[in-house]
Length: 283
Ligand SMILES: Cc1cc2nc3c(=O)[nH]c(=O)nc-3n(C[C@H](O)[C@H](O)[C@H](O)COP(=O)(O)OP(=O)(O)OC[C@H]3O[C@@H](n4cnc5c(N)ncnc54)[C@H](O)[C@@H]3O)c2cc1C
Ligand code: FES
Image (cartoon, rainbow, N blue to C red; front, side, top):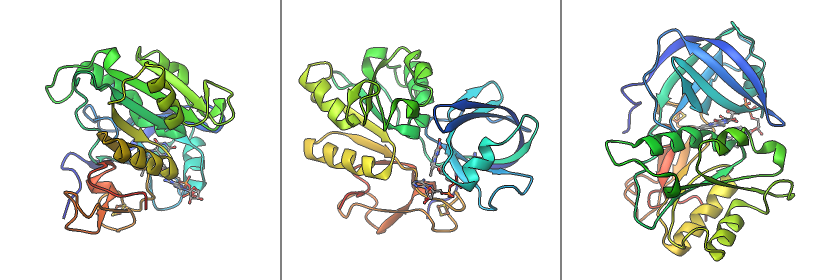
């Protein structure tokens, strides 16, 4: 069975800044006691405060950015754990365990087939470094040009398009969609994608990467399968341990796919990024 990644470890860290972001989020910056090397985008860390003010079970968060030895996380306040993390003050201590999971596949240029990143709300977090790393070149492959990438960022309303200005500054074509029409296209990211394809801004054949709420990922999976598009999903499943022990994070596998030997994969150690050929979210 898959094991935790060999480069993962647990250590203490100090919160350095907590900045409000969007209507209900924060960007938390922490300085680990021992530095981590560069982390692949869409890998994650389990975070827990050290002062007992948070549930015992740590919570998983994607790496958002790295600044020297500091790690940044983009956190939406959902419940007790994320609220406690958002309430951290400079100097408070927390435990970080990671980097966990696999991360995005190598984002190398493919002729006439741009990578289209579909972000839903806080699901934008793994795309910031994803774009940076694609533009720098991944796994020794040629770097993408900005034209090889597009970010389609959707949310219920403008205030939930977290850190949108920072994403725009990455220099990649970025379009937004909101359910209430308060920013960009009125509707969801798949409606936006279809409208961009109809207008010729994006070709019919694209390679999809998606992260967002489960219902959105199910819709993306159906969309990709119906059109025969290559597609990878980064799942935000509920997790307990993050390292393959507790079985809290099952993901149904595709009966005709490469993971079919087991009816479920473990999101934490086999994911969180899965190809649509591997898993079956939508029924
Ligand atoms: C690999 C991975 C990466 C993630 N990256 C980020 C990130 O970068 N930023 C971020 O804000 N969040 C991220 N998440 C989600 C984050 O882990 C949860 O929001 C967090 O664990 C909630 O903990 P809590 O104690 O605040 O809420 P809880 O009290 O545990 O839950 C509050 C409510 O939210 C629901 N809920 C909790 N977690 C989820 C979930 N994953 N999906 C749907 N509903 C949920 C619960 O059912 C409950 O109704 C990620 C999750 C995974 C697995
Ligand atoms: S979270 Fe424990 S096995 Fe995946």
